[in-house]
Amino acid sequence: AQSVSQHNHHVILSEAASLELGCNYSYGGTVNLFWYVQYPGQHLQLLLKYFSGDPLVKGIKGFEAEFIKSKFSFNLRKPSVQWSDTAEYFCAVNAGITGGGNKLTFGTGTQLKVEL
Amino acid sequence: DAGITQSPRHKVTETGTPVTLRCHQTENHRYMYWYRQDPGHGLRLIHYSYGVKDTDKGEVSDGYSVSRSKTEDFLLTLESATSSQTSVYFCAIGAGSTSGANVLTFGAGSRLTVL
Image (tube, rainbow over all chains, first blue to last red; front, side, top):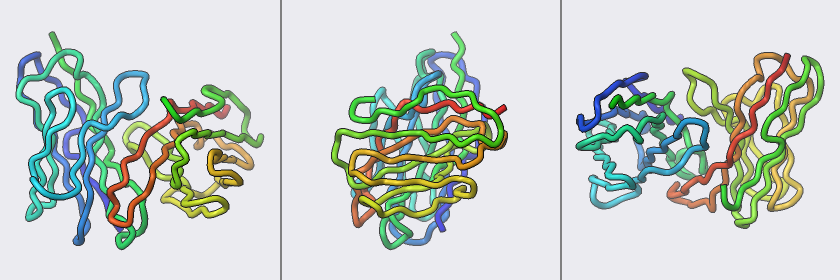
């Protein structure tokens, strides 16, 4: 079974600081990886995804993530955060049909607060 | 969200009563999912469907049942609600993929409080 670990549960940063949120997954086969964001009071929105190819993927709002297969990691980064990035961030993995179906398994989330 | 409608958006009920949440999609996607979101647990899959009348359990399916009689509708039923089922419930849809390259789109959520 696939699982996802997010190391940081709460992160507080000042505007313009750099961000890196950790995500590790456990599944030995081919995986598809996602980061979703949930702004206060809203539903989840896709931030970025990795299916194959270039392990450095770019998403919306200046976010990027790097897939490191040897470390089973898919960390999220942003060079300079803004107050509007305050939200909860979820890492998720889908191992496809061979890994148990089209099911997305989520991490427990990281609450990011950006202070002015 | 565009293409997914959840109802009701808010519901307060009492322990022991049945509750049904509805998810309606207009995207004609094959896969539909019910997740619950709780602090400290993230999102956990309750049940999902991979076609009309085809459903399977997720990791927290006890106390829940689902039905999908039409492509566009996926119902989640709590036969006898308990306080531990107080949560925010999200429906999601996806076209599906044999490789798992399946992007899920989420609904706005249904907040259920069981007193």
